[in-house]
Length: 227
Image (cartoon, rainbow, N blue to C red):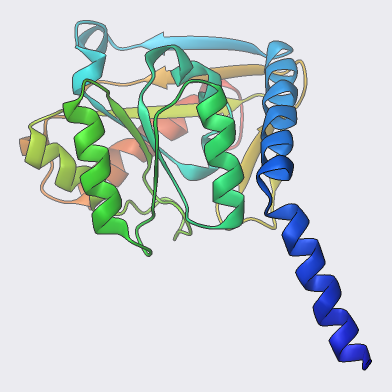
């Protein structure tokens, strides 16, 4: 048996384990436990715009930057908003983690079956769920929104809620395209749900990006991070 054949067999064996329901289910359960323990050490201040508080959260779209999503996993959990995850293997595990937190999840991305995923998100919304989307996900460019959320907002007539998150002390994972922010344990953190943006107020995603960056810079300023 050749070395190449052995490597192929080993690769197939490894994939049969890591792609199995047992492995991905266990990994998701462990990840959920770690996230819950980890986030319990964080001191998070939540700021809600008055207009947001008067809103029906099940009739709204929440937009956030992909790299700032860690603090939002538990923030959104009680509201059961619909989320979208990638179609990759990692996206499959992420789906199971989010489902364990109680989220309805739609599989898809802006690059792979994006139109179908948007339709599924729309159906989830019509069944009584709000929705939250990583504006620049799943692969960037960083801080540049994809058109999906604006399309949904105009189609449904729902406002977009800009969501900003920051931490006083964190690790920035430089190897990631989104400069993923992971708050350090016991750090002070900040999450703001901003003023609802009506779809007719936004001519393009550039308008949304400009407003999102204002909230992001404010959050970083409150946490005394360089802006």
